[in-house]
Image (cartoon, rainbow, N blue to C red; front, side, top):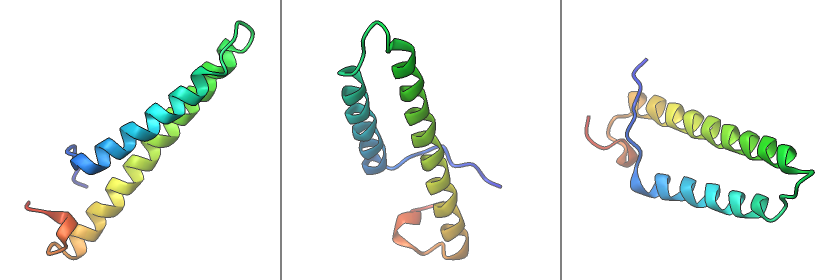
Amino acid sequence: MRVRLSLSPHRTLKGLGLALATSSLLAGCMSETGLLESACAANLVSETALTAQIMGDRARDQLCDRDPGRRECGRR
């Protein structure tokens, strides 16, 4: 299986926007007692976003393998 490390600029900005929005929401909830819980929640959100990105990239790769002429496939 080929691993593609490059990301489209739109996809990267969308992911960064989601990460910033999530971190800003979690930052407001932090207190002395909830610091560990907030860190765990932030870690879970980060892992989930990364997993979703990987799954999306794999799905796109499979589509491009089946039909390389698709617009989102670009040049190889």
